[in-house]
Length: 530
Image 1 (cartoon, rainbow, N blue to C red):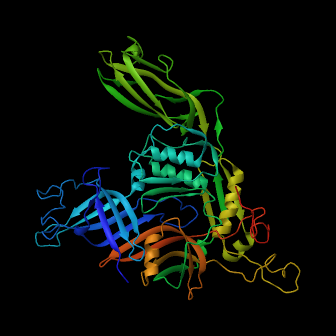
Image 2 (cartoon, one colour):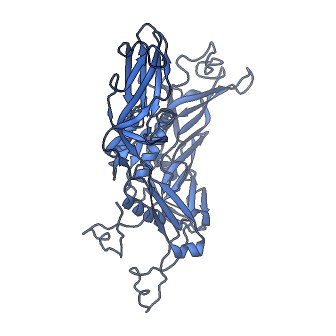
Image 3 (tube, rainbow, N blue to C red):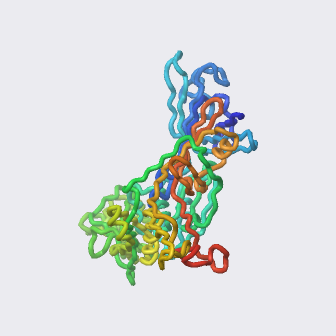
């Protein structure tokens, strides 16, 4: 079996100015990790993906220069620095197809010292999800009657550097209010808000190896087929039957909002503030409940601040002296949860802000609703195992209840009637009963090595979001799963080994009127939730 061919490229001429092949200086191993780290009901958004490389920093490299990849060294390679973009791909010898498995930017560079030592430089590149984790939500207004995909697109656009590509599914829900509980007066990462929207949708958000950011809506993982089935082909399989991983009761929290009928004061400066002569200051004003200033709220239909009505500046701190308001340049950026003030003193003397406020309709998220689904019989048999799922922007309790039922079915023990020939209610095989009763085993991950050319092709071709089947004789596993995360290790001479983190697939068929095999409600299919 032929080895795969790696290709590592850097954008040494600047972003968008072409890739430079540096493969000749790359030493094994290469480790690439990305995707959603867990497989529980709330594990739905990926963290930062990484690629770890080692570069030849000795005279044996392509330039025959010691310190070629040491930033600050006189022999350093031109253009090589923090922030340079990295692309890693591998060619499958069986199909000659190139598979991009990482696109990111250099986050760390660690040269190993010593003229006679290893003379290697370890670099770590991080993908766009790291960009989203560092960018903050700032100035975004409260979103009204927007679908989840519309909000996701807005958040992606708020990150200074765009992803390589995106694939955003149409969301199942329209949210009455969203982003009203974001906090741009503190370190509130865009990725955190993406995760809140994704959880409210009960979807998934992640980045594929080729740099495409994907948002899956709620129904995108139903009624699909396996891309491949592995039959006793895995090198390692993590299988656990644990009571702690089974849910017998699910509580889902939804957040109905209330909104003021007219504008109120949502922010008020509490202390007199000095602005120096010819100086400028920036103030962040979080919105709070006018009846309880300790409680944060959102805001909508914000009113453009007006001189005298919403802000006053005086020459004396007690509000006396000259009125300097006309000589002050005041800019207010009114977001969904707070206001950003930029104030410049053009009066020629020290000025004091004696009044500063922002008005709008308050959006209040104070009274949550909790929907619950429980299988009391299974709780008695297995012991109670409760999961609480918070859907931050979901306001409909009916959706919360359907979500609780769905998650209980997906992550709970499987109760199936025992077939009893001739017993009413227990003998209609395939209608009221099935053949057995079982407790689902949890499959956390699978490790696959290239024992055959076909397996090597699957190692490179499969990605986060793909559905695969597993059949393993000893453990008895025979089920379908979705790939949540990928860890790819490539060692000399071009041998790939992959570990896939797995989430259970919903293999239940749902009702589709007139579609054979999907229309026998209560027999071959179940009602889906919306």
